[in-house]
Image (cartoon, rainbow, N blue to C red; front, side):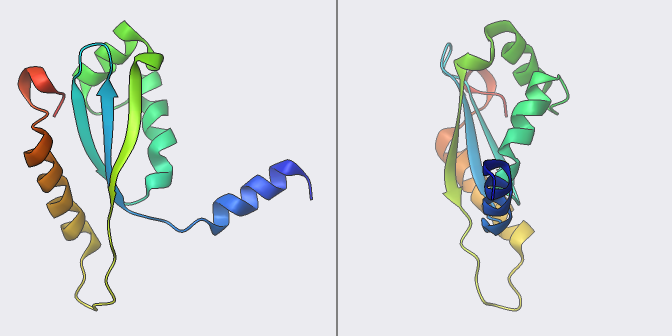
Length: 113
């Protein structure tokens, strides 16, 4: 099997995990806290910033101003799924995001949220 096929297979076998991520501007210390139902999509977030399609226009503006190498991406927490039939992933992800927003306070001059 060639390397491309191996990587594709590895990607397919990697479990889909929901979680909270952080984008940090290392130039001015501003933060953006986001959530996703699939942490594998963080490359898509980078792509949308690169092409100006991200929902947060201030973050896009500073991405263009400072350049992509000024920003770091970090997974803050992976959502722990429960074997409860009433477990609501979207709702629990929202609660987890609120927890991190409260803790990091990325508002106003401190961030992009």
